Length: 115
Image (cartoon, rainbow, N blue to C red; front, side, top):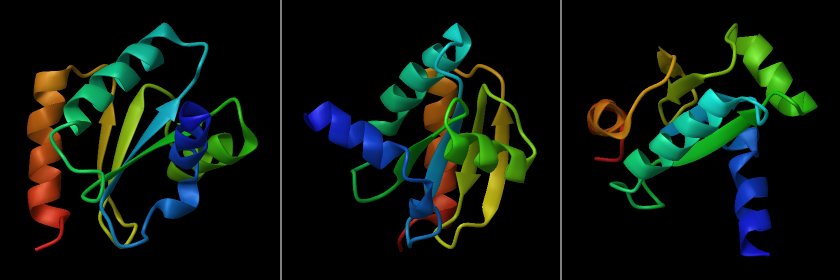
């Protein structure tokens, strides 16, 4: 039950721009590279508290996720970084590994996180 609630929360793209920096993965659940990127991103996100940065998933097999990807002009295997106001600050396309993501996300949070 908790994993279903967590998944629904991760797919609530209205959370972008609600006062916390966010990371949105453009995700195709049938894509092995997307699944690997999601795993690495989740590992990298563990350095933050749940109240610091929001991790969201735009599932392009669903209408909301597909519209979000089109709105931002990106395809799957992409991470979009947003500030607390919902302004996109960075686009990371392609596979990234935990160590690289930890550095990028720490910089993003340092620049756009709560003071």
